[in-house]
Length: 419
Image (cartoon, rainbow, N blue to C red):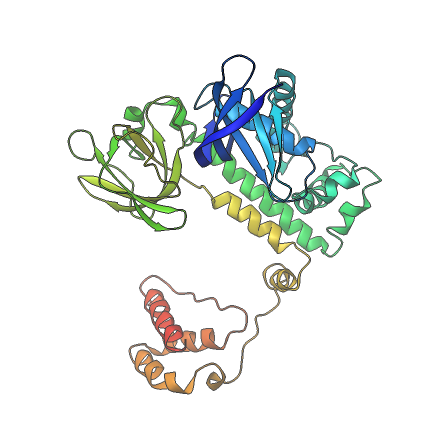
């Protein structure tokens, strides 16, 4: 029995990557804790998970905290436990990170990772057609599925991919069928095809070992490829541009910046060069010159020592494939917006157009629009009119040098003039 006192908030939404456990995540609150026992008090830094929903102290919530105790070991000593705080009731539960719970969670993680690593396969003797592989068997627990954030995607993959492989869900899961009963066979085929395309692209990126090199290779070797800059220190003040966006400036500890492929707008991962400071923050390059690199980051790194050495790595594809798969999932939702998009994208229904340009151009903008159109040739004007009359979409096609960029720039000016 002991009394626990939270004495300090070390970090908020601390971002941690753990290559040794194959985990990454954001810890809601990293708290300094004073533990009062019969003997003298002890101090620990422990993860604190905040829950805004109904208080349950469920195994899912507790397991999340146990995983955070593993992640915390990348930055500091084993916290041995964490806390689960339900904001609606104010009740806080200690969650011990015991060895058996950690082991079972890592076994589940490794099992799922195995399926993701082997998500595509060749039919026949190895020279056949490439196809997606089945995922782990669906659980037949209506209550668990009801609150699962991935039930829609699970049902989609089962019906669009696994059905064709002869793998069917348990008979007592009709609630999964309801998730896809609004889709046509052509929609399911489209989903399966683009899942396969995204998986192939993922394997191509993994083959280049771009992300793994961040922890497998020293910064000096990564710099030779042009996608990394190391031996950087913070310089100047950190500017809070907006909520969750902080402008940082970095310069080399010696000499000028090395030759780099980093450009304005590139997504970067910022790490400390000492052990335990992997993936401190993500953001985008805002300026690169011979003396400094400025980045807009999602975290304020002011708490770190001024002599901390940083590396900036180009983050290829972060949000790319996730965004593709997320958009693909949204396209298959049972909503009026998604149904319209499916009719245009998958079923090839012709886009609809208005008849009169006067119905989309405000009277006060007509003179401005006329002046903009004067600088365009006839095909560009026809394309412009088609876009303005479109109710769905318009494709503008042309050989290089035919003026597509000019047309788009003029279109932006017209849309701005129209409000």
